[in-house]
Image (cartoon, rainbow, N blue to C red):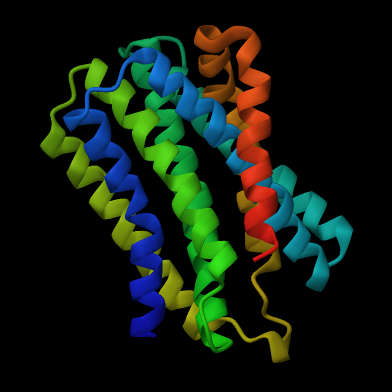
Length: 234
């Protein structure tokens, strides 16, 4: 269980690394947009190859589809709450917090399943790399938005640390609770994460990337997706 907690922490720690780069490196808006576009491709690849593809191996397509829609609905409801009329926050802050919310909805189920791979004898290199590479742009882009909105580094780091610890605990819980021999594979958690993640990148990361990169956005997304394809073959 400690090994699962460790690997869950390692995977989620990329969120903190992204936050540090956002504050210490002070990246330009164009650089952040490039990372958003590449991250969008990586995250869509994660949805395709690490979440949905794995979920349908052990659960019916119908249930996977239902839980994908539930994940999308939960993110949409949370996103609406962040940008609802009368809320005193800038659009930049709301978008940044929406990405944070998406990172939570995705990170906890993903870490839960990561714990299962430790239970099976070794951590999945493909899943771990996918988690690391997808968490970094989420941490960077959301933290860059919060930085621009006036959030102090200490406040942002405390927020990400809590999320990282929750993800690590989720990995440990996955190790303890899942059992493929008994049919407990975490497939529906993966489907939920896929729906939330896909909705998040379409609502927040992709529009912001396109606003800066314009016609180059699609090619950058394709590059990120191709990296995810390669990782899925490891």
